[in-house]
Amino acid sequence: MARARGGEGEGGEVLTFTQQLDRLEEIVRRLEAQELDLDEALKLFEEGIERLREARDRLTAAEAQVKQVLADRAGNLKVEDFDG
Image (cartoon, rainbow, N blue to C red; front, side, top):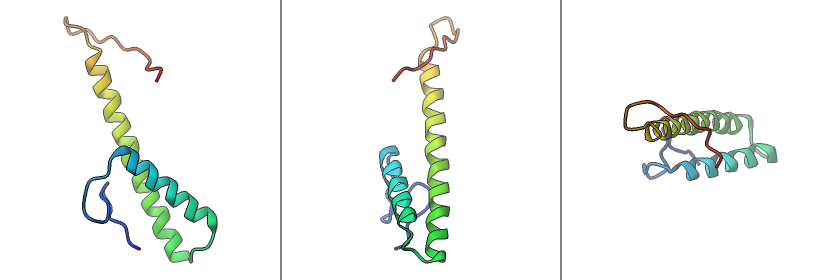
């Protein structure tokens, strides 16, 4: 079963961050099961790396957005650790 790339599901819909993580977990489970032929395992590995990069990019963007929100009215950035 081929999966779409670029943060999209099979139907072309954009996957949420949670859906990306769910897909990554599915990929890991399938790779750990060791029931795939080499070609399919390589395709899944490539998809996993791409989805991991997309998830990291989303986290970086979210971090930038949080920092922007924390800026005070005078324009000074007040950076605080997020303990969530």
